[in-house]
Amino acid sequence: MNAVGREIQRYEQLIDDLWRVTLAPLCKSLNSIEAPLLDYWQLASRTVPCLMGLSTGHPKLTGEGRPIITSDLVLFSESASLARTQSRWYRLGRKIDDGGPLQ
Image (cartoon, rainbow, N blue to C red; front, side):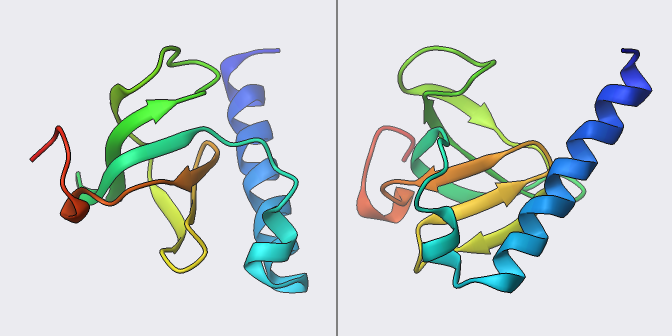
């Protein structure tokens, strides 16, 4: 599959996830997902909203507590401790306001 096909698959998965959220409460619809943990996170902005923090369990950016900046933020629920970027779901751990290594 070429790069365009892979990008189409990413957007199709995003659309599927957004439909799932509209059909069930956010917490219930996401209980079974496997998502990397983003610890000491904070909202950030490039030209679009995103998150940055320390990632653990990311399928491509491997390692524990690895500093990352996510792709574009599409869905965000601090109360549910979940975020959906263009690429994937993230479980939100401690917010940077709670103290931590990025302050």
